[in-house]
Structure formats: structure tokens, C-alpha cells
Length: 498
Ligand SMILES: *Cc1c(COP(=O)(O)O)cnc(C)c1O
Image 1 (tube, rainbow, N blue to C red):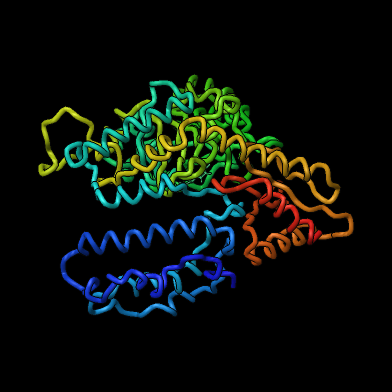
Image 2: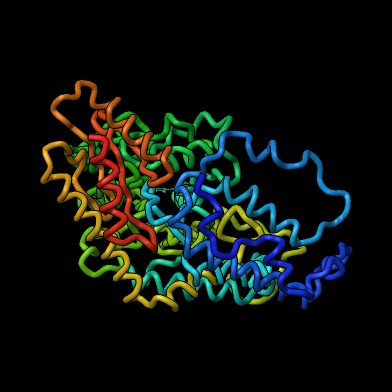
């Protein structure tokens, strides 16, 4: 295993004890917190460790090489009775935790959507943990409440969304989409908040529409809202994996004729399998004619809207009701941070506000607990504020542009080589492709095997999808550290086996 040996400065006892003040006494277990002096010393070591990790992550395997249960079998079954020396705890980070880490920050992490954190983002998390805010009411965290409003508005402008959108931070896109659908349903005035959906024979079947290629989070939101899978209609896609707007129109007409109540369409800019882009501009008039809420899932691709030449892919979003984007995906912000941009925060509030006596205040302010299911909320905006200030709009734009350039480069190599073919049109920084050597009969098995071998080697991580029933390899370019040589490396690994 290629683990810690590449690290110049792992956290080991020798390292720790270089600081002569590191006596056991300094770490004597106590019922109070660590002293400021000890915190400073350990903190410096941890920052050093993270710096080394970040510098050397490329030398670690991308996918963790441990077997299932390895970590569990190596940890005590019971909590320690007495407190431990912190140096001991950190030794176990090296010995036990690091080998079980899949390195999302590795520049050759190309699976799923390649996402990575940045130093600015790490500092944001660190400070947020130190402040330990629970932003439920404005008064329980003016900073978190107001910084969230400011920073989501900055990103709104960067994405070229109009001022009718208000940003609210949730943990993940799955939760953002759940809230969008809840607000859309609240807008129906069917008294679902008061009387629910069960036991009501007068309530017609409600319908939500999305494409066959949309993310599973749409279906999960439908499940959680008690609408049932029966309420979700999956519209067919064209050969570019984009929702067929004519089929959407037909489905809505058929449902209305049957007495059902269509209320929401979820379209995607940047689907998970191929990053395909639903025709938002064609979907918008259908939603407007039928008074349907249009929610745009741009969890992955939303970050690309900050790049002027990519804004065309988001045309139509100016007439949607809500848009979700995940800075934790492609904006170098550590997980988690998803933003729901919504035009109807009044409906979100109507769906979720519930104020017990002990939370009543008389300030005329935004209390963020009113806009979702959570009471306490993390101070997430701090890390995004750091990221945007550190890189500036131009730094972020350049990085995303470079990712798209690298994806195009790989797609060009694939298209120029008869042993390879693209499995979907190139969108943003996601390449879907497969090997197609003439002498191979079972191409699905061949490609699957190829991907598995590369993943098992720890050299790179690729993932897959099925397109038109065929196995396709997905390569996502998204790491803050990725360079052309990393794409060359994967191309070499792929070709070594074909
Ligand atoms: C990743 C992704 C999601 C889900 O993201 P989470 O933040 O992990 O819930 C939803 N939709 C699309 C298009 C995605 O790519």
C-alpha cells in the first residue's frame, strides 16, 4: 500500500514530541476543555499535517484500499474510560483513519462528480466549528443569518440570476429540492399543511414531472412528501439525453384530462449521468401555461453559470421558480453547502414556519428556522465567503474554464482514436465514453473490467453509467488540483489495457 510513506511530516509521536513542551501533563485528561496553550500547539501540528496531506495527496491511492470492516476491527469496541493524550489520538488518524479515506482531493478522482475542497474552504470550516453557531433565529447568529444573505446574493449575481431569487443554504441538493417541492405543493392551496394528504377522498392525484435522466433526489423528495411514486412522471429524453418538451406537454395534457393535478416540473441543467441539459426555454412556456412550478436542478453545473460563455446553457432559468446549485460540488467549498434560489420564499415559510413560545422574538428580521425543516443551522456561508473572496470571481471562472478545456481535450483524443468512442455528447467537464476495440465481443464486460482494474490500482477513480443499455465510463474533471498531466495519465492507463 502506498500510504503514509510519502508524507514528509506525518503526525507521529516523534513529530509531536519534537515540541518539548509536549509532556503528558499538557494533555492530562480533564473535565474542562484543552488549555489555549495546548490548543495552539496541537492546532499548529494539525495545520502542518493538513498542509502535507494537501501537498502529497497525489501520492496516495485515490480509492481507499481497505477491505470492508478493516477499520471497525481495528478500533476498540468500547469508549475509553478516561481521557487520552491527544498525540495518541492523532497517531490513530495516521494509522487507522487515513488508510480508510477515499481521497476526493486527489487530482485523479474522476468518479461521480469530481469535487474537492480548497484551503480557503477548510479555514471556513475551522472557524465555523470554533464559533459553533446554531442559526435558528437572527439573534442566535446575526453573522450566520446576514452573511448567508450576502454571500448567496453574491453568487446569484455571479450566476447571472435576477434579483427576484433569494438564496437559502441547505446541506445538500437533495434537501434543497425537497424544500422546493414542498413550497410548490404549498402553493396549491389544498390545505395539505393543515389536513395532510391521507384520508382525503376529495384530493386528486398530484403530479410532478421530471426526465428519465433526472437525479434520484427528485424521486426521494416525492417519497418524503407523501406524494408517492405514483405522483412522479418520468418524461422520455432525446438522443442527447435531454427532456423531450413535447412529451412533457402531452403528459400534462393527458393527466389534466384524467382529473389529476400537475403542479411541478423538475428540469436539470447538468444531469448526473451525462451532464445533459434539459431545454429550459421550451419547458418554461409549458409551465407558465399550466401554472406549474419549475424547479431547475443545477446541483452540479450551476457553478458553470459564473462563466460568461456558459451562461447560454442556463437560458430560461430567469423564468423558473427555483434553482438549486451546490457550491460543494464545483466551487471548491467543502461538503456540505447547497443553495436553493427561490422566488417564493413566502411559500417556503408558509410550508415550514412553526414558532414555539420559547423561540418567539419581536425583532423584524429573517429567522432562518422559518424556511425549512431544520431548527439549528450550521454557519455554512462562512466557508463560501472565504472561497469567493480568496479566488475572486476571476479565479473561479478560470478554474472552471480549465476543467472544461481538459474535458474537451480528452473527448478530442477519444474521437480521434478508433479504439474509443464517446457515449454521450460532451457537456461541461464530464466525458462519457467507452472502449470499442474491434476484436472484443462483449464490450460491456470489457469496459466494466477496464474501469474496475483502474479503480483497484488506486491510480485513478472512474465511475460508470448505462446509456441506451450500454455500459459507459464517466470521467469528471473537477479537482482544484487537476492538470493536463493528470488527464494524460488516465488516458495512458486506459490505453495500456486496450
Ligand atoms: C449530485 C447531484 C444531486 C444530489 O446532490 P446532494 O447535494 O448530494 O444531495 C442532485 N442533482 C444532481 C443533478 C446532482 O448532480
